[in-house]
Picture 1 (cartoon, one colour):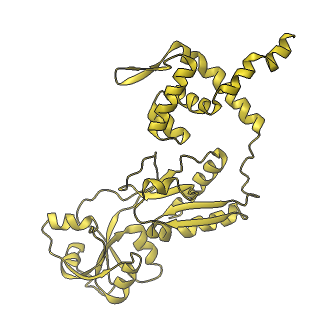
Picture 2 (cartoon, one colour):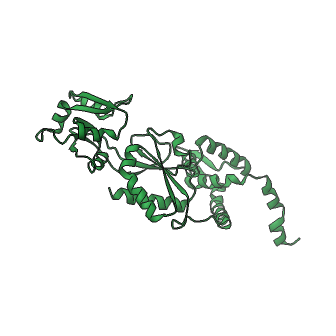
Picture 3 (tube, rainbow, N blue to C red):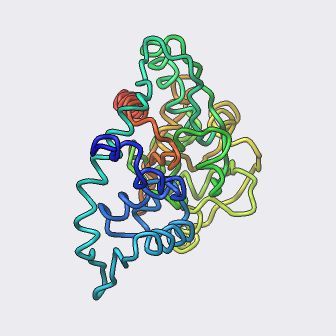
Length: 307
């Protein structure tokens, strides 16, 4: 048997039948990231699953691969030797598989974005319009959420989740647009009244939840008296009721400005310093289509710049 035949059908390749090749992708991620946590995020595994994969890779290769050193980790000489050939092998495998590239002109996929009602109210129309223009055969599915759970980021085919910076995410996040809290009052309130006077003299319309909107704790800390005149479960009805029935409310500026195109409301700045209320993008860690991800990310930024 010649060398060429040996190389293609010899015992080296036969031994691969007993090797779990699914370990190679997380192995490369681990060697390049030099962090179990970052490698797990990159390939969409939980940290325990990544640690388990590392144990199996060490057993398979007979090497520690990564060794803790101080507050970080370092690669063993064997691990350093593996990076280039492993990267090359996986790139060639991807080329052989010839995964289809996302083509927005022809793709008919369902694009799923999870967000709150208020975020959908602000940026949803712009996203819808841009997807219709740039991916005319695709379907946009908007999943409305209240408070995201870990399952929100990975279940039901969600591509990306848009969440407030105040909500926890187990995965990396990137700012889409900034927002802030403002005072929204009826148009017939005394024009000379300051935001602080409006808050202390006008009845408040408040979303009926177990936990009061956080700016109210600031008012209480500052000793500002206020009275709740109405509780309502639908967040988006708040500015409409303020405009038509009177009173005052605390809202995100982007929501108030969008509602201002439909109903006449008065918008004043909140009288005390507050943390930001920015909206972040969190991508499904299992989303493997890089071309689609880059396309949708650019589209979301375009939608946000039009605010």
